[in-house]
Every structure is written in structure tokens, then in C-alpha cells.
Length: 192
Image 1: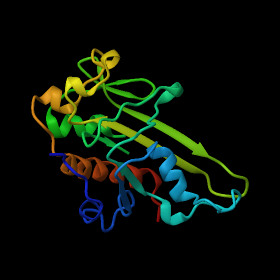
Image 2: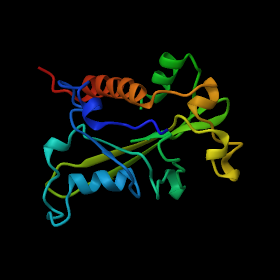
Image 3: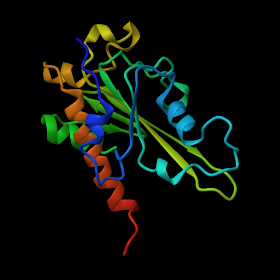
């Protein structure tokens, strides 16, 4: 049985937050970064019109990505219902699971020298309009070795593999989003 993410239940944890105030969970998408871009700039909206301010902190999860991507055009493998496809990642892994992740610059989080998570930041800039930053985060949560393609099995790991037990993705997503929201608000909240 798949561990399903439920948008309303996740969103209920963030009534006053910026990150997580609006959460969308898709069953499947090509890429979460592309999907969030379509939400921010719906088809038919003028390219020069600014993205809505209500999209600040929008979180979009997908149970499965068919065209997930990483840095330098690499493909991101996302087994259905086993990861979180949507920074402060290393801190959350450290505090929640007592694992010691390392950062491999520029955008990877590793456990035992194998990739457990990656971040892809994409910018959209328009003249006379606010810029839009899309931060795609992929975390291998409940994959087994067999869920990875053969060519990645010696380079990838999941939290479940490291812990030797499954992880509740919904609970992990809440903790991760709380950490992201705290970090985001400390950095970008208007100063009074």
C-alpha cells in the first residue's frame, strides 16, 4: 500500500506560515518545476504579466514524476509514492533520523557517499515584473534498492534504506516544510 500525501492535511499544519500556506499534490506530472510554473503563470496569461503574489510559498508535490530533472540536464528518478518531489534538507534528516548527511556541492545531499536528495533552482525573470524562483527538491524516502535503475543502485540511497525501516512521508513532509518556512521567513520576511 502506498503512503499517500494529502494536501489538506499537510496544509492544516501551516495556517500562518508562508511556505505551505498553499499545497497542491498531483498524482503524476512530467516535472514538479514545470507544473509549479504553470500554476504561477497559467496558460494564456501574458508572459509579461507578473506571477501572482499569492504563489509565494506555494508547495507542489507529485506522487510521480515522468520527466524529473536535476542539474546539468540529468534525469531525476522518482519511484511512485516513495519520495518527496517538491533546503534545509540535511538539517531535517540529521535532527529527525540521527543520520549524518553531507552536502556535495552544488546541489546534492548524500548519506554514506550516496545521493539521497537533490535541489534544482530555476529562475524566471521578466522586465518590470517580480522574478520567480522555483526550487525543486527531490528526496529519496522509501525506495528499496530495486526501485532505482541498475545504473544508479551504487550511487543512490533512500532514507528507508539508511534507517532499515519505512518513513512516514506525510510527517516528514510537515517537518521539512516547517523548517523551510522558518528559514524562508527569517531570510525574507519584511523587517519592521
